[in-house]
Length: 328
Image 1: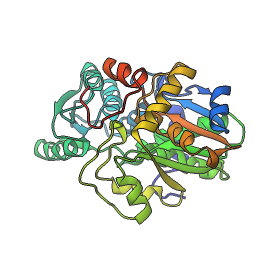
Image 2: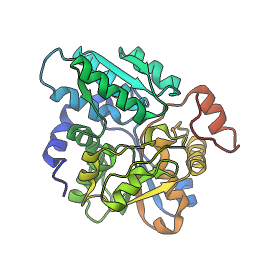
Image 3: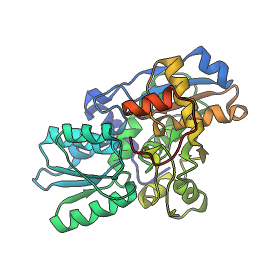
Image 4: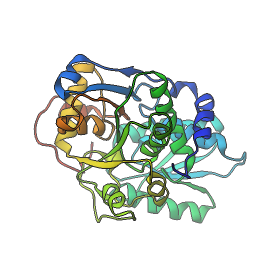
């Protein structure tokens, strides 16, 4: 069991996180079962003011801060920044977010609408993170790194608590893996309350750093990322998350951009849901390896649903080949 994420704090978090992020829908559909050969249940984390699971951990993190006027600085492709901006606005704390220069404009405008000072820097999220870290040091601000604090995982762990409390045996949980908070929080809870379930993380094939790091039991950086899944486009893993994954995560899988697009179109057609590539990586993994999950009751998380109008047009309705690192 992880020493970095606490079951008692997950339990406590389930009562203090803003209710707007809690008790999200748990859905299933006969066609998903037919296509996968499994019994698939989906925890939908896209129906809240920021359209992603990030609000759970960011709200919890800001609640745990000592009351003061120290500004916060973070880097985000968009969903983490939205969650932090939502929580910072409630707490009346200043927040500056550095986002990649070619970031999703829907996510950037949402962060600004919630009151964050958003600045564009770098080609990818890890470039933006380095600029943010240096800016925080120079301005005596609190640098807030996604995945580097237990609160983010413990907030995400409340998803697993709701999942197990819904009833029914779960044989596997398949979770998108970016900086690691979502996977770690869910894994810690599942290993205690559903120990029979395997817990699997899913990265993009174009951003394999977390998979490589998990396999080699050390931080492995990559020179670049090439994926449409900006929320899991990790080039430089967070050591805290890797340490917390040990002993609770069973395996890390990888899916292609095309597999994520196929899963997105399926979710839109069958469930009527708009899910972004990084948010649907779990379903993509289930669809791409049917033999592995056949006959099992498998849970996954729709972790985010922030798509621009152009992305919706191109990815949900256009079946052409995807290309990485696009600006939308």
